[in-house]
Image 1 (cartoon, rainbow, N blue to C red):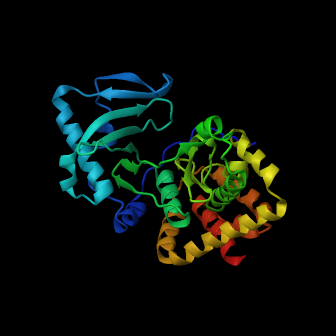
Image 2 (cartoon, rainbow, N blue to C red):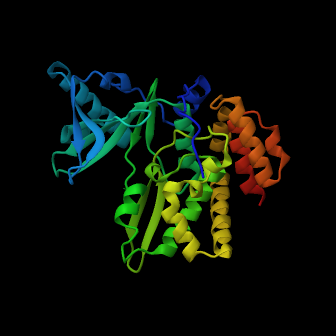
Image 3 (cartoon, rainbow, N blue to C red):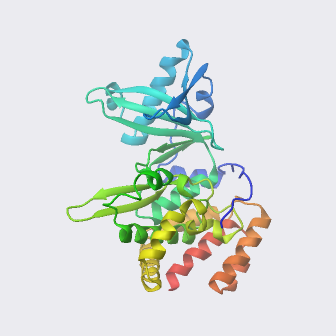
Length: 340
């Protein structure tokens, strides 16, 4: 069973990481920051279409601030989606600003509506955290998914990642007669491997979504992480393996029913080969990122010591025992996929 030891503190984005983000067009001067959105004057609980409390609150700003806040939010959306092309702003309106009241980071979720066709989209404004930035960047470079986000001073802007949250999927879709359990089990094995190789922790069912894509003959699944706060922080190896979270047992049970040990190993090897290929393609950028991460302090010494011992035992390699930071442990883990 995987357990998170205690609440993880946020880590400041240091100068070296800021330079990396600037070089790769992640750092962008924005008109509003997270702290600006805290100046709301009232809030009401947000309920879903079934009348259930979502634990989000819709917030309202003073009349004197509304135009400033909403115009700033539209500009930020243009920065995130169109590289700052302000021509799209005239078609947009801010429909709602929600605050998450149950998470550690208390993010804001912005609902943007296109006035021409009523199409809507979301994006998020959060407090900056170096762990989260490293997690998103590793996801962008090493997974089959691309992540769009921006940073500025103490704020992070993130796109919405579409999909059915894992916990909702288990309630609504896992009993669907059209479910393809073999394909879903295969994807969970590959997702488990991706998380472990790059040391992304806390991937229980509330922290990932399942993207379901119908094809002409079959249904395809993609499991995508949506929370990167626990990138390379905890000391226990099991925290980086989604299979050990009790919330994910429905997927584990499917795998036990439909997968053989041989097929599990095959999919693990396949995913490691894909990661190795992405590492080679992004060789220069990965080197720059890991050079910064290897010198950053993003976990307490006791967590680093525990994890390096557990990884050394798992891989039967003393290389991990020489690591002094979480960044070095991530790099040592990634090197394993290059040598096998």
